Image 1 (tube, rainbow, N blue to C red):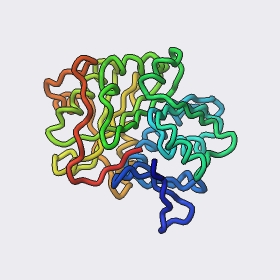
Image 2: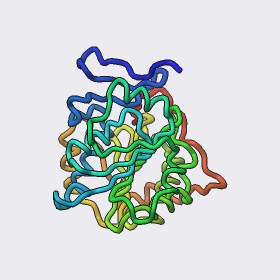
Image 3: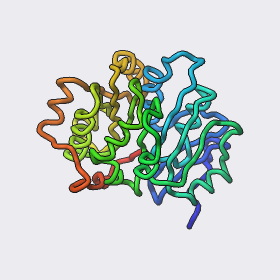
Image 4: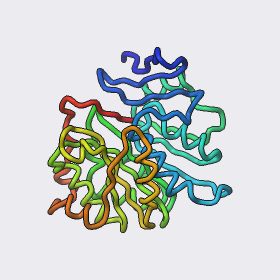
Length: 271
């Protein structure tokens, strides 16, 4: 298989993970705090206002579905040393290349399992994780098996009462696929929010949407404030506005689930 990690000539020591013409990750192993992709910056913001608001001496456990260059796990290890992290990444050849070219820090607390997300989550014990971050793509599409309510039930099972779930997905207006995923989240968690660039919200282009679900209400005012400070801030919706956005969408089940739509001429970011 050809290499998928390429040095970034504009940032010595940094690498891009690419699948064909699609950028999947950007990693500078010496500067894990430097997050380039906008949706990754927003994952960090949500974590700051949820999980990382817990006492500093509390050991946390985070599950990542999808690994690629391990950008978010590296950031969590830098931001909250001692956090136990499990990454489910089925592409063992990619993981081997990452370990060779941009190895994980010693005693990072990051364990990579060569399994797909569905298999990995099903094997985990109940009430295991404080956060589950789903950021997995088959090429440029979210795998169908990660969109169904049966998978969401497994994600809920492994989460603790105060846990937060984040799901990076891609879609285009009128968002029929993403609406069904959000409908599944809203049936299983008390609080659900959706963030995306304004141009994506307005249907002007295909793009990333970040979904956040939890039983404890997240600090959305702080998330919005920090998001607005970024060059590509997100518009966040929840509550009645999100319910209207979902319209009459029905959640996916294993019987009718499908991959997310393919990109259509837009620059997307994947983990």
